Image (tube, rainbow, N blue to C red):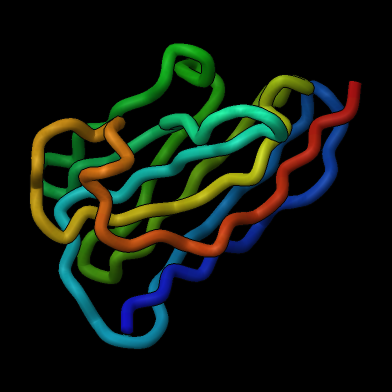
Length: 125
């Protein structure tokens, strides 16, 4: 069974930074794309960022573009999310996810095969 372990969440003041990490445990697997999603209380889960290992292209939601940076190592299926200039509206549970097969859209949750357990990020004003 593939498991993705997420770490690095916490409480930070507005304007601060946090770095999230996601790495696999359990059965090994190959991924083509890894991404981050988030779900704020009372809202639907939404796309945050993704990275395509082939070519290294990165993709961001408009709301985080310029503030968040996704990076990682495809050989190890490890992905990070550096979050700078955090805002209270970034408060959410953050999830990492992996696509075992390239299915097209990086922002569509249904294209992802494996999910991490989520980590809480709280940004105080």
